Length: 193
Image 1 (tube, rainbow, N blue to C red):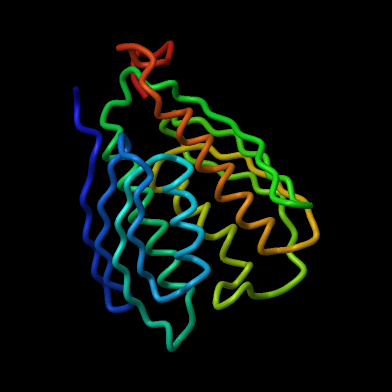
Image 2: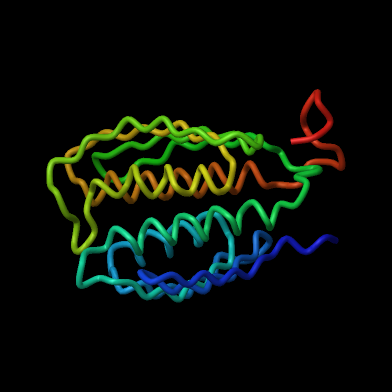
């Protein structure tokens, strides 16, 4: 069986990130970014996607969390793309509808080699912990761009923590379904993705 794993390091003047990903893992997460709520979301993502994910990230948090969260999106997106290789045999499409108390998130995605994000989400507060709610969109845009996937996502609810967590869990379940091996061929009339 082909190993669907990846290790990536990325160091800039703003961030230093090491990431390890195993798409055929058990949902084991070891996350340290310095932003507690973001760690919680990435841990939840790994657990529900059943991906093993290790991230060590340091950044210029004295400025704010923007650079760190953006760069984790870059590295995780690249790791997803690299782990999938030529994408032969994967289901390609995935979707999930996940509730969390009063919040409900829907995610549909296509691992088709084209990046696009449609996100319908409004947040009432500017921050959840040290995590700016503006960065939800930016994280998913950056990840989609680097993973070359199309993501359509929406969420409603009253509690921003619940809404963001439901989005990350719905994304996890959609990815879990999309990367599942269902055959040997690439699911495209072009013969390649």
